[in-house]
Image (tube, rainbow, N blue to C red; front, side, top):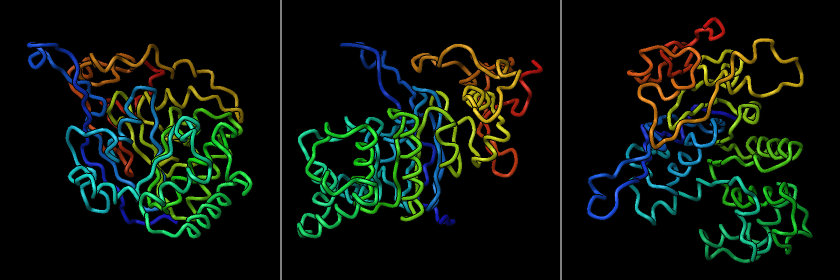
Length: 335
């Protein structure tokens, strides 16, 4: 059940990667790739924040910066009021009991030399080294049942399972410590469509049962539609829209969000006749040479002169619906 308690606050986080320059000229010529360029949001207990955008927009980098798998250039990540970016290694390790991650490739994220039971038990042995083996076995068995894995699978190895089963193992491993927040980094993108639905439904059931908060990353809006409380749309390391899930789907204000929604076929209703006018051309610009002003302007159907010189701020238009666009809400079909 949702609450008003804020667990995670991400405040103006930036993740820059150095590149360029060699030898004596290295320091002078060195530049930065702005993978995440000042992103802020919060997550409350029991809610799901969906994060969407094309490949290369900074979704996974942002997730890894939150739990310090990659270093942040600046900003704050407040976990229940404590800044994770200021903690030493031991203190951060203690916090990771409450912050767990589910990865995109279910098989590659599992140790091929460990059995299912060993994989799920590993976090318990790491964080609770004095826990009796009998208690560990009982917890592993209970978690296997929770995620739909049969008891006779406990001594099998990852290569003996399907992609969907491997992802269930990954979910079980993430949940065995009973964390408060799970970061799901495109957890269903490598799975068949029918299996995707099963895994998403499993996550939703576990969320209700354990009162979990989720950060759910995907590259298209259709995947996050039913699981998300709110949706944040990223483009080239920037937030372009953030709102309640229903508001995003019913009334998208940013042209990039409209394009993402238009790109998803809806089998329940025919495609609109003006669908082509909502789409965007070209590919994501290189982060090595990002556009000036608005990062989306080179592909935007409603861009004007101001967009090339003035980067729009993320403003609240109404009812907490945030959008970063000089002309948000303008019907691009009229342009």
